Length: 411
Ligand SMILES: Cc1cc2nc3c(=O)[nH]c(=O)nc-3n(C[C@H](O)[C@H](O)[C@H](O)COP(=O)(O)OP(=O)(O)OC[C@H]3O[C@@H](n4cnc5c(N)ncnc54)[C@H](O)[C@@H]3O)c2cc1C
Image (cartoon, rainbow, N blue to C red; front, side, top):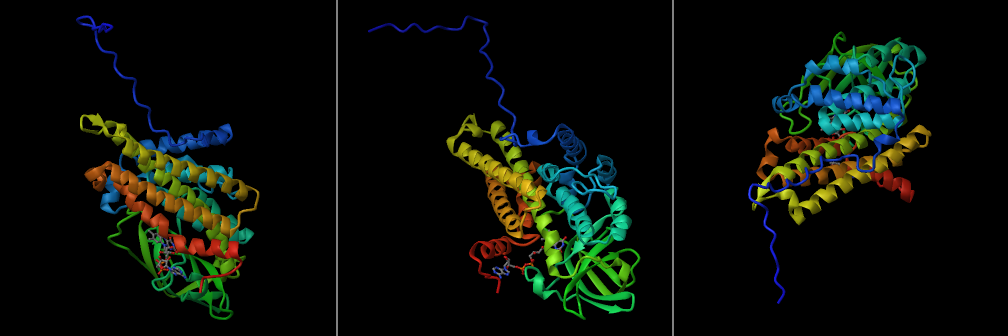
């Protein structure tokens, strides 16, 4: 039998330390590199902002159910108001940049991204798409500077998914004034912001119209903060009551004639929720991967176990698939080809994949996944809101189902 000579390290020689483990890479297919250099720089600024200003404080605000007004000056400095909108003091830039910024914000915190989405997408977007030239000139510049913050009031206490045909908030024209009555529920930013885009049914022609309501100076307007939310706790949601609010005709968005125009705004913002959901999954994955690299069980990092790697591999696959899908959606948006069905598919797919991914991240933290201090629990809870708002998963699939079959299954 051959003798095997064991080579022993000499006395005092140190064992080579293992190479450092790789940092999580959430841009696996290098999507950000497809941006032009100046837009990559904007994205880097957004990342620097989230790391310096949001990351250190956000868990505390989330636990306390409070909005971090202290970050508003830094958001103003970032100059991302009206991103992807042209003129009117807006930041401009590509549809892809708009999406990547929303994703980057959500990667740190889905509430901050939602705040950005409600103001920049739903409120500014409503004016950008439905306002007259005069209205855009008046309202968009201060909103792009984040001096006036907006919200979007569509959902009502009794009407969510059925908003297209069922809004009960009414608008009655009296000369050059509209009298608005009704309630709006779940409205993000409403408890403290400056203006609301209110969608109401015109009693004369039964069509949905939209109005810019000045929250702080309109008699009959009141708002109650919705308490005890279990997700997106940093965004303040409100129950708005409009009691004989008198709104001048000049505050009716002049190009909005029916719910089709509401849907035009929602198409753009569902596009955005796809990015937010992908960012939320990225944040959960990054935190979970770091945890798995550090957490020891049975004397080894749990990231070295096959079943753990299987979950991590499925998570980065979900994220990468979502990123590629929404990047193509940004191309369609830029070419003016994005349809309601395209946006619905993206919103349904990315939010479902986000929900799956954050649940796996939560699972990988074991008990610590339930503690807000480990961050993953926050992404886990926030994903539930992304899955349901701006049209639930079922509503998106009904929009898509109608487009692919030619048959409506709504009612
Ligand atoms: C955190 C948060 C923020 C929000 N922000 C805003 C905001 O800023 N502005 C705003 O206007 N709204 C906002 N919303 C409201 C949100 O858009 C609605 O909650 C959502 O559209 C669903 O409406 P609903 O809650 O009334 O549920 P419902 O419409 O009552 O639905 C309940 C369930 O029934 C299902 N369902 C309903 N109809 C059908 C059908 N025909 N076929 C199959 N299933 C069906 C739904 O998919 C869902 O699962 C927000 C909600 C949340 C939770």
